[in-house]
Image (cartoon, rainbow, N blue to C red):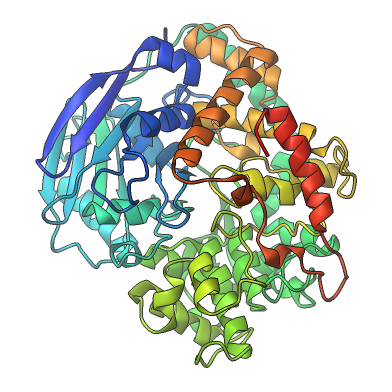
Length: 582
């Protein structure tokens, strides 16, 4: 079968050993790649109920059959482990240019276990792993780390065609449970704490180098497919929207729908949203569209701040989720300040969605007299100080560093805490987007918007927001198709282009495997079962598929609400289709 290397690189950090293990073709046929393969490997090699920061918890990096191809939206990698934030299945994905270097090393997956005696930078090449001492890099931020690794270890003779670096920051080193893995400065495998697992193994960074390329089944058909998708995207409204405004366009959309989480999930509308909108970003800052390799979306924003205390600062971003987390939840009404928080979190190596949620939660805890902390909504100096406290695990930051479930329990605020499986949601309020409530609850990694991106069919009227009957069926169709995206691995923003039928054409030209919607849905269902198996082994019950109490509160401004009865109706329908016990 084409499209795969058929090899797993296993790395033992404790004894500084590595080994190449053949991956059976039947495994690749069944799981296709990245997400499915990651779940399969975790089930096969992780000891049951191993603590996330234990040396036996495996950290797995993977690229899929599309990685070295010219398929649009395919410059992505996935990382899989047991989450230190949730205790369940951890998956995260990142784009940029580095995924192509990971793929060029010549493995379908790289699996790392053990703990190094000293901090290291791993240099991974075809057939070779070098364990470089990195004691002097420990404590440095992600940007400086990435630059130093490139300067020291990238092949100067240009033997390899591709090279790229993954790095972590001080927050992960200090055991903050939502540490990120960063590449290309601004791209992050951000959610569920994979960076913290990497830090626990004393890996400061990983350099991938290589010139390997996958063999494909039908290069002519693949070239035709890529050309066809480019033509489809040429004048597509979604492409024009992403190029012109990026994800920040969603600030207006969500506020117009009164579903923009505000004042720590108590309101659905921010009356100063225009100050943090796409228009504000593009008129008050110098912004140039940018994109990952092999992408015509250009959703990224290369931004330079033109005024205020951060004048001259440059970044790629901020994305919608960072704007919602700090702008809505924390009620910061300056796009420049939100951009600064984006940079600060990236440098420290923390997930901005979780960090913004926790800052807003701490503000609420302070206002309710639960903690002694001088901070308020919109207080940019107080929020900045708190982010440093979290990264260093100082004061209230020590509690917050363990995540929302821990903080809510410690401060007796479980009635208002917002999460599913211990992961905080993205910026789509399920009291309006009710299908997003189900999406958050049943997502295998916790409250995730990307497993289904179900706000899209709800906005489009494919599944009207308040119509509950049949919602789970539509959600599963989106969830299954995007599971195939994550096995290949493909960017979410190409969901309008890669229908079930297009995916079947793509997979056949890459691998030779013949498929259709029914067979691909079966593969996606098998992957869902594989992850469910892992999560149940780690202690998951049906209660973990339910939302926290905070999301069943009525919004104070619009009175919108999601009732327990509504949620249970959707969940029962979902379970019935999946064949899961309630």
